[in-house]
Image (tube, rainbow, N blue to C red; front, side, top):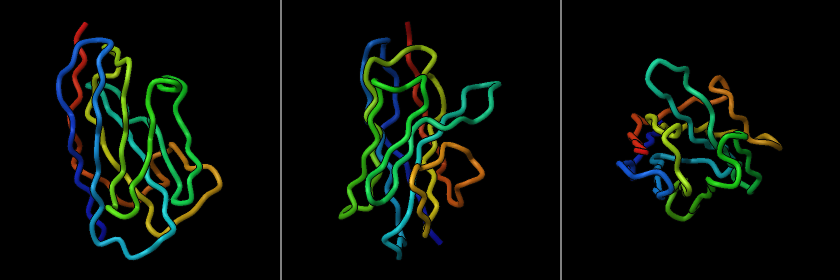
Length: 126
């Protein structure tokens, strides 16, 4: 059973930056895709960014140009660099994975993922 553990959340002012990490344990396959999702109070969980094991990425329009997703295969770690943060980015951020799995474009829909972390809170103040 794959386990995902997020870290790096916190409170920042608008315009600031944060770096989220997700460590995946018990990963036995080289083909996978992983993503970051977020859920604000009273709203549905939404896809933010995703990446396939061989490199292709996908971003929600709301974060394009501000967020960057990457992965360190040697450390089984998924990274989300968040810059120019806005108050509307405030949410619980979740890491998710489909292992094994592959698609030419990593999906941002929740039903494409099997494993989920517990989440890390990001709060952006104006």
